[in-house]
Length: 190
Image (cartoon, one colour):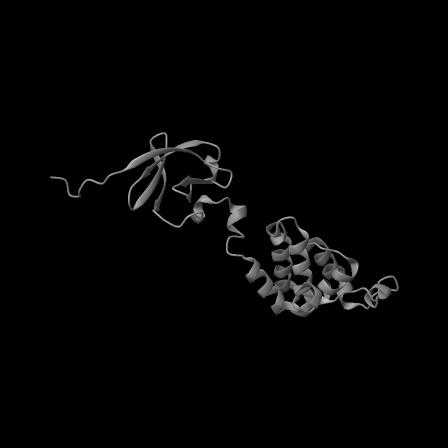
């Protein structure tokens, strides 16, 4: 007699999507990202989902019943995605608020100005990373200067810090902008 009882399994052919997941019963399971666009076979039991490529198992997951949700293994992600997987809109905004009001406003503007807010994650996280090198006070001042200049990128804030213009008073060209009546202020973006 076998050590374990027979377990019923279904097989399904799937094509790996651009997001390196396959869909099984309205739930998404990750596979190694190098398999994008390839056809794989899934073995589905009551408890597990195993994914095979040409007979070799490439992934295994506990089965989930949550519809339209992903189950993702970090090793399946490309390194560029792994870097940002723990960041959410709330976490980015919370970290920006810790830096200062101008950093919070600039990062909110960056996230809102993109067609998809996630496209602003790289700039926002980069700006937050400048705190390690320059400190919160200088980064917040650089964000204030970037807001004056209508600059909405990591490169702009980094250049302001590198050139030290965060430590100087606004120039004559920038000063009228600073006190212009149409400036909405940070409360406008909340």
